[in-house]
Length: 293
Image 1 (tube, one colour):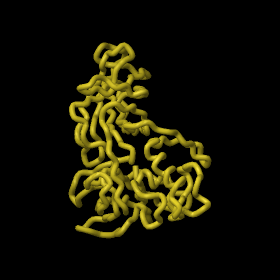
Image 2 (image 1 turned 90 degrees about the vertical axis):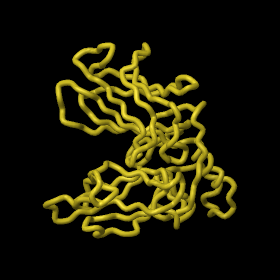
Image 3 (image 1 turned 60 degrees about the horizontal axis):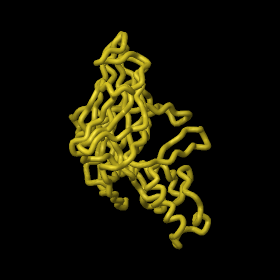
């Protein structure tokens, strides 16, 4: 895979939400609404240096319900955790189910508004949220109607290729960027190449599994990564109308289980990652899929 390097400026940017997915935890009457999150740059790499920045969940009147420092990302690509107390009624130190909280990023230069909110819709849930630290443009998938947000800086770079690169196929030149197309005909959509950090005009540059089998007595998957990007594994027991489910993985044979894995090398640098998977018991067969996040 070829290297892509992005220069990210921390201050004087606008933040837009890129993705927000919730995963259920055991229901309890009241408790804590936990949100784990990360900030991404123009090329979908996890931001690593935020200085003294903090993320706040607060009411419209400025009452801060939860606050978290933005730290160096952990092995899952998470660099903040908001722990929001939930009670039967709103109080100065807690909120109630159904209440929306504004997200605000604070730095030594002041507060930067995040034009989105977190809604506490069920007590005791673990959520994962990703913010993109740049302006984004939304695209709707014509096949299923799902929408995705892609940084305009990334779109502008790809558009420059389409407009000026004379080596491209004539059928591509001058077209507007289409995330659902496959410019290099490598079987991977342009949007998936954005997520993985690979180049959409090079059919040799794509997310690639190099080895899958036993290693250190465990089932292991080895793949080529781009530094700063996050990857996950899903599995299904059939390829006929598969129901893919996220699998927890390990970065070492005896390490802790994780929902996803961030490549350790420098942003944009290429390398290899090995992740270990525990097969499901009792299934006649199991198929695995590697996904960029």
